[in-house]
Image (cartoon, rainbow over all chains, first blue to last red; front, side, top):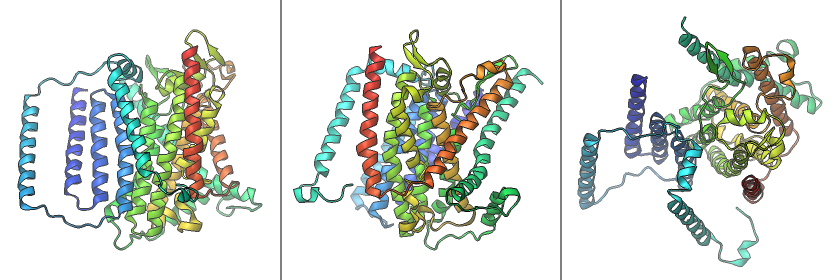
Amino acid sequence: MEVLERVAFYVMAVIAVASALLVVVNRNPVASAMSLVGTFLAVAGLYLTLNATFLSAIQVLVYAGAIMVLFLFVIMLLNLEREPFDLPGFGRIAGFALSVVLLFSLISLALNATARPETSARGGSGAEIGDVFFSDYLFPFEMASLLLLVAMVGVIVVARRRKPEEEEEGEA
Amino acid sequence: MSDTQVYYLAYLVKLLVVFTLAVGLVPILVYAERRVSALMQFRWGPNRVGPFGLLQPFADMVKLLCKEDLVPERASKVLFTIAPALTCIPPFLVMSFIPVAPSFALAGREMKGVVVDSPVGILLLLALSSLTVYGLAIGGWASNSKYSLLGGLRSSAQMISYELAMGVSVLAVLCVAGTLNLTEIVYRQTQFFGFDATSGNWAGWNVFAQPLAFVIFLIAAFAETNRLPFDLPEAESELVGGYHTEYSSMKFSLFFMGEYIGMVGISSVLVALFLGGWHFPGMHALGLQPGTLPFTILGLLVFLAKIGVLLFFFIHVRWTLPRFRYDQLMRIGWKVLLPLALLNVLVTGAVVAGS
């Protein structure tokens, strides 16, 4: 089983990295978005190999299933043209430097990492996660929901129609 | 052959049974759809190919396979090609989480009547079924046609909106079941009807404990599978054919198959969540020993019968109700179903917490 797990890890890792590269390399924004979905699914698969089933389900449900659909929706509505964009010379150099630094820090992290992340034997069931949420992490959990509420109210305020006479006609 | 080998072989057989169930029901459904619609409209329907027109699905298939496979000029070829597959795959994956039959003993181990028995099965199921939307949206966009694009956009907006109501209605069921494991949810419904004082949870079919959640889920199911009265993404009177306007041949039939497998999948979810899964009152009194293969097969047949009833309902509704207008569809989803589902969760939560 050890071998199978290894194979699953490498397959998922290769898919994740390859589709992440495709996100950046693709000129077509819709294809980029779809590649990003591929990355999310592969990462969800990696979570599965770590026995974190709950996290994996949420990853697919929230990122691949909801957020990326909205991304795709917006990209399609904007009807972006495939235009090559040119950064100014300074921006290119800065971006390149930043990516090199990031790459090296990632590589050093990967080389120094020894232990596999510890995972629960209970397979990250809903009950277990709920227990932790409502005991150890109650405050951050409640804060996160407050943050979401604030964001929601903010969106409604921004999107609200200003003129009262327009309120009457056509909803959504 | 060792016990382990028997076990893995049985596992493969199980996979095959579920896969065949999903694929095999498609031609039957297509035939039933045409016959039932004909009956409802005082027509004959297909009755030329084979006895009672039973071979019509095969004739359809041959016809579709022989058609020219067109790809529109300036279409995005790769995305245009993978889109039909993207609509077809998620419903298959959904089927693998459904407990279609009770478990039975095999080679000293318990063989579960489900392909993937996960502690968070219902979440994985919802997650995978939410991926269906990509096929429709990408197919619509990649066709480079305005009707297809509108169909694709409509489908993504509609499916996201109704996923919310659907998910929240499932939440109420999870409250009464007290678990995210689908096998456990079904098993709980096979117990007696009424309040279980020892576990503090409701037992019996969830449709009786959660009638409102059932109705909300059922309505959302129509929207999720793009069936009438919510088939806006392919409204032929406005959009020619919606997201699959530009598709032909096998690619079109994959979309078609995706829709029907989606129906089978969502009916299975409904049966497992609300209608007691493979359980039927009195099936324990038939003399078959629970935990043996005959009992499992009986459970599978009961499950199939329940799906059949639901699928007939799907077809019946399609040929009874007219199509909703798009703003009406959105209003029902956001202003009626979602608040009702939230209210349902609130009341259910209060009752469960209070007992």
